[in-house]
Image (tube, rainbow, N blue to C red):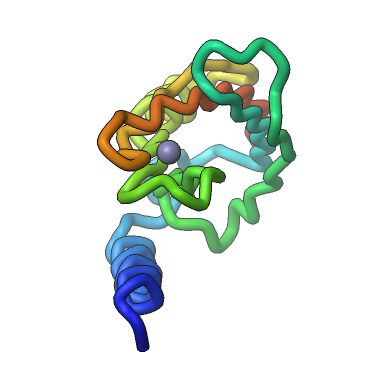
Length: 125
Ligand SMILES: [Zn+2]
């Protein structure tokens, strides 16, 4: 394996390990019935979203971990860790919440700074 593939494999293994070790979502937000996340990512300074998708979380099996990889393939060590803000909303019983997160990775010598906007829609039992 070349270095890039090995890095990717390591990151994947690391992510799997964190998912396995994270508490279950339902242990942290007991009454949660469903959760949908709308994610929109754009380069800094660009108005229109380049990447957007909807993630439906399988509440029964999901870990309490919300990490979104950076969609720029040349971004190194980037991504968005939304675990803390999203878990705070779910523990508070929010049915709709939104926020933004800036990628912490590097593209070459400069910070990536891709902006991820998220909207969460949750229902509770
Ligand atoms: Zn990035």
